[in-house]
Image (tube, rainbow, N blue to C red):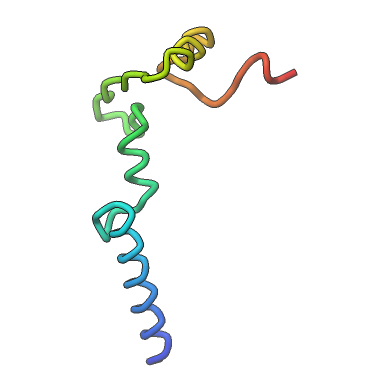
Amino acid sequence: MLPLTAMLLLTGRFHGYYNWRLTGNPLLLPHVLNTRTYHTTVSSSGTTKKPEMPLRNQQFGEFLQRLGAQNNYDNTCPTCAR
């Protein structure tokens, strides 16, 4: 039982250190930080929508407007499905 406990403690410490180096918080997972930073839609129905992020690339903004999906871009392209 002692070796298992030691391995779990080492693994937990490593994950905490890894998260701390990436996010600055040992309890905050990197993919959660990514979602909070870059996703403007909300996952639950009781919260308000985040403000849209300004696009820094004019060509990408025009691409999103042509698709008509600036708010709900779902990684699909009608011309790519040929």
